Length: 78
Image 1 (tube, rainbow, N blue to C red):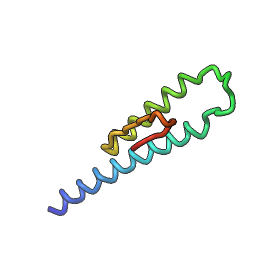
Image 2: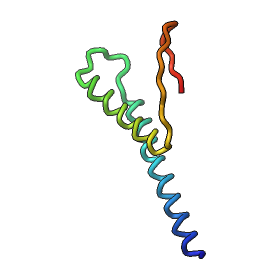
Image 3: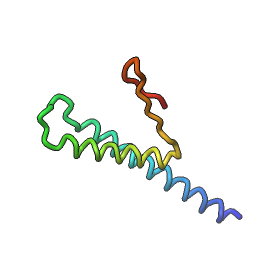
Image 4: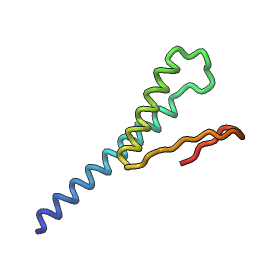
């Protein structure tokens, strides 16, 4: 039985490692994004990549993000 527990632990650790790699990648993409350059020619392309990485991270966490914008102003609801 100890062998199966070791295998389970290895799978869990690999899964956690994957989550951390995706999160670190997402953070890096956000940090490198040129917020103060509205003429940035890859704006939409980079936003799509960030959005895709965010969706991947949410999927790994088994969460369904729910973004709602109210009539009172913009706001996010999770």
